[in-house]
Length: 213
Image (cartoon, rainbow, N blue to C red; front, side, top):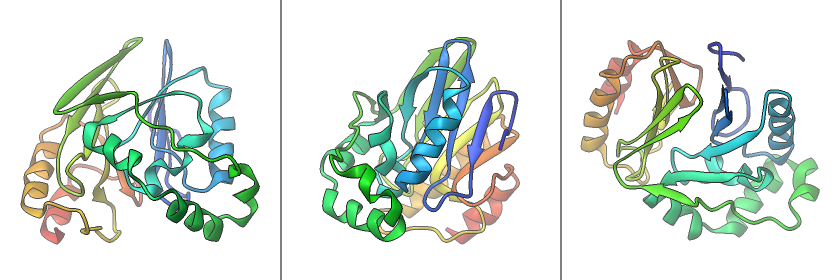
């Protein structure tokens, strides 16, 4: 769906939510579809809107990064997210894809991860056209968790630091720090939060989510 004049999101794919932002100098994509057939469909959808310039990941879990194979583009991520991708269990990810998307198995015969080539530790600002993409390390769901704040659109992508009406995944979490990160998210001037899973929500949801964490 079109969230703002330049921000498009998809929350119906099996796996993590994905989005892309159109700018005067090209497209910035955030996350990738986990299923190959969805990745190809998402790529086709973007092709009519401009040239893909960058892919940003909020974290290194398979449901967020598996589809990177289908996008010939430079990847930007936190340094710990890059480490997670480099050391990821490819067989485990491919086995999961095979169960989720049997029709897509033929598309991944020569599968490789799309490893980030640009990393940061605390903050990074990406300038493209009249847009600024503020990448902020907000540890919580993972240590390398990244929020992507686009002030011109009043939108923030949070990855699994926020899941709307969906479970929290705690296996690599730092819970007390997570709560502090949610407070920082609440200080951003945004109209829309694009969570890792579930529908797009507003800042008012952060209180309920914090109580859950």
